[in-house]
View 1 (cartoon, one colour):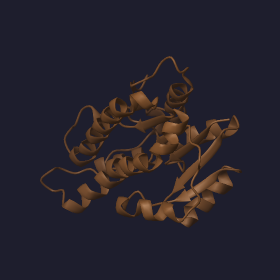
View 2 (view 1 turned 60 degrees about the horizontal axis):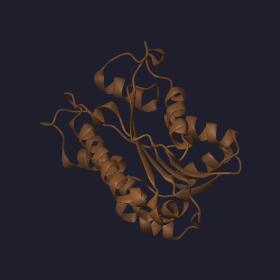
View 3 (view 1 turned 180 degrees about the vertical axis):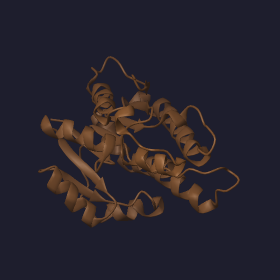
View 4 (view 1 turned 90 degrees about the vertical axis):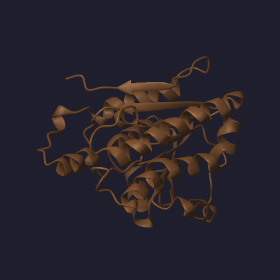
Length: 229
């Protein structure tokens, strides 16, 4: 039975992945931003353990986790949580940049650092759910795309650094996916949101589970998931 630490399990792709792994009997450790969210996740996924740390404040993650029982075994670390806030570069203030860089890049780097001992011991797997914006940046996506381009660099560096330890590293680049984040994006773009036009989170979850289930003789490095309609 494998043990997975998942961020972003409350909705969208993260919830779909957590549900798949929970249903097949794997052990889940779910990261929540606060105690209330942790309680909701524990009720939603009976038997799962929770940890509380706010990805918006990476400087406090180590201290927060240091006051909680940590898993001594970890087969995968699944970075799925993320935030987005659109706007032209000429209008974006430092606060907006910090919010997206903290949640989308710096906190995943810090969580990875903290759990690398367990991942090395298990010859585990780190999955970064990136974005199409991590490969191509468009107008008004500057801050978000910068955070995701940085996440690609983090994953690529980590892959080279940890290869000898047997740690696999995968980046997944979904196109627009039906989720609360997508609803927010459409609101900011001033467009009507129709989830039926976008990738189902379950489809992205399928690719993530495939990557972590792949036999040890192979590794998925980069996986792009595009809308099929």
